[in-house]
Image (cartoon, rainbow, N blue to C red; front, side):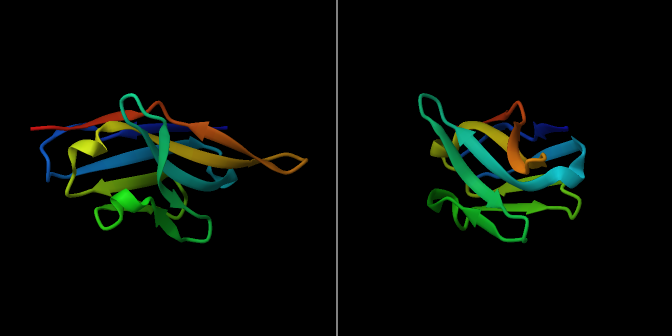
Length: 121
């Protein structure tokens, strides 16, 4: 079992920066990969950044060059550095982990409660 908790959200002016953190606790050895998602008001959930088990990190096109995701070796902390923020980045940001479960071997998702980011002047 893994529990996730995001922090670092808040109100920031356009062009500003925020750093989100996701603290993971529990059976961290079962984490296969992690990701950051967001849900903007009135919109569906969107994948923002994906951190693979192999160490690669991918970003959705709209945040490339502005957001940087990182993790520690134990998956205990995953961060999302957000720079040059735009009003369209306003959303609730969620941390998601996929856990190896089984047998039979499979993957199960765990989600944090989310943290609100508001970009407004």
